[in-house]
Length: 130
Image 1 (tube, helix red, strand yellow):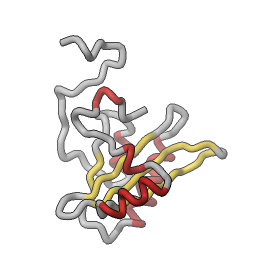
Image 2 (spheres, one colour):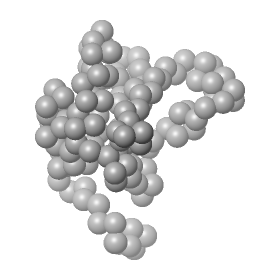
Image 3 (cartoon, helix red, strand yellow):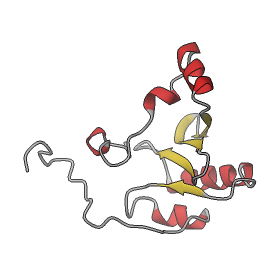
Image 4 (cartoon, one colour):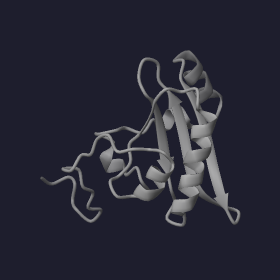
């Protein structure tokens, strides 16, 4: 929900790297890609997902997704848990739509370092026409 396909030009989501299976595992091994994944549940239903990508020489990247039924509390809990798991990492980067779960992100210790005011998603807009 939070990574619309139409925004792949800005920050492409590495879907093929995240897929399970031998082929993807072999690719990650050969390319020296390191990922970890977490999910938090609420009443037996997934409430938030997070993938961590280690990047040599750069900030590590975090990818987060919250389903429509997810909650701000679930996201905050997941982010805090992962930050405790990754305390040895110097810097984590998370690109996230402005004003989406902003309080949860800040309570989990994340700060705003860059905003792209010109990037607004109007889901009803025709993106193929200027």
